[in-house]
Image (cartoon, rainbow, N blue to C red; front, side, top):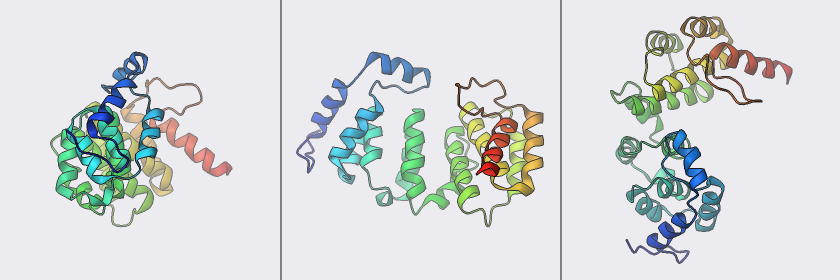
Length: 228
């Protein structure tokens, strides 16, 4: 791996730079959330700012399979440069939660293939891929709800969220809350589903943060909207 970047660094040198930033305390925190790296994300962003956008380098960094390198790749890539098939493969390769979050939010959502992928992933047999489809659906609920069947989405959530695997359940719960926050006509049904399913009711929430339990989440966000 000897690719040289326009900034004068090789991929090997960048991997060494990332390795030097490895912090056991950071790794311990990350591993509790399923992420296998120990690089402070603020320091990772400093490297990305220095490198700027470099699509070829991003592809090489992604190929290493290293979590920190993949996070760096997602910060310096050109989202619109990826074909839909490549993005599909990347989602299926990525298992680290932070990599998946950044891939969906920083890359797929900016891709011209986002709607195509949303439809393809939404009911995928792999719950991690399906979770990505639900995340894209939540984005549409906010920005482009026209054409979405919100009643059908609520039917699916009501039937399947309670027993869904963790990551998929989280994405479905977020979509449920977002429908309730954004669409007043559906709010009563959303709150009813949340009260009956009790999903994430006991999720530990830090002081000053809002609980992901839908009745609390929706209520707090609506209150904030009304007080603006």
